Image (tube, rainbow, N blue to C red; front, side, top):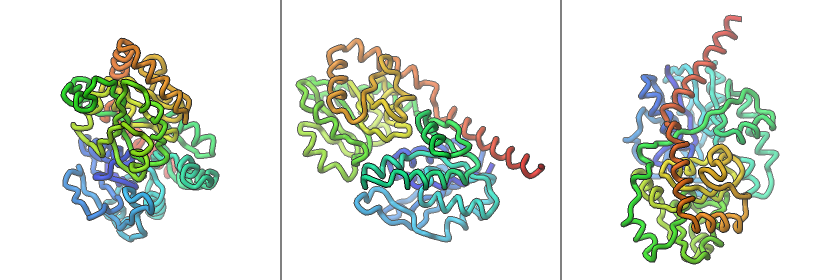
Length: 374
């Protein structure tokens, strides 16, 4: 099967869309298929040496106020790449700007398209402009209604899409690398560096941006015997360093280094209320770490409250603090939650998730053949 993956982001970018697009391309190659990736150009035109397949980069500009995010500019390169690859199907990863153009190009060429919903644009509209939620949903509905199939990463996302009139939605969660992320990487030396006085190590991993609401960790930072560790970068870093006195900011970490940090935490906390999935929760669970997360969006599918972690009301700093306090007081409970979390994610490999995606491709192609025959 020949597939074009049109993605709004791709490594070296570090975010959920980029990671999922990379894993999708890898799995397609592993299964003997022929993918091509089309993505925005990176700052400085970083090489794609580690990509599993050819990557076509289209011109882009940094998003004002958020230079880590790049937005594709209009370019004939996209349509030429799709046509030149002669795909059986077009995969649109988080379609917003480049993906919308990819959808239009697929339609002109008579190609089926699968759109993967990955970003809560309505939530971002509320966060960044305080309005525009209805307009964001109109755009989402318009883009995804044109696809043969829309894939939602969680039950909450699927229900949101259907409630706002998006047709033909199926569930497609994300995989996790349970070989890289594992409890055995817990590192006592690293822990001594993070918490030299034996503090409970509470970690956040992710982008440092307004929608992540990392400032909710302020009350946790003030707890005696707790060291908050923040991993990631983004436009909010300077403000968060002021808002979280005593927290240790490690910057962006990836690969085995990130896996070692995850496994060395005592508690993982995610604060953002706009997650359509929340991959870092899965990575923490794979590392055997108990999770505290908001009871909204993607974490509802991932965290079993009272078994693998604790779900708390969104945007509630006191609830986050209280959940951390209860876990700090009970090492046995932390160990039980961590072990249960690891057991929960062991079957959620990228291979299993990738095979499910290929099954959806086959369903779409069969549907197209049936429609032509009729």
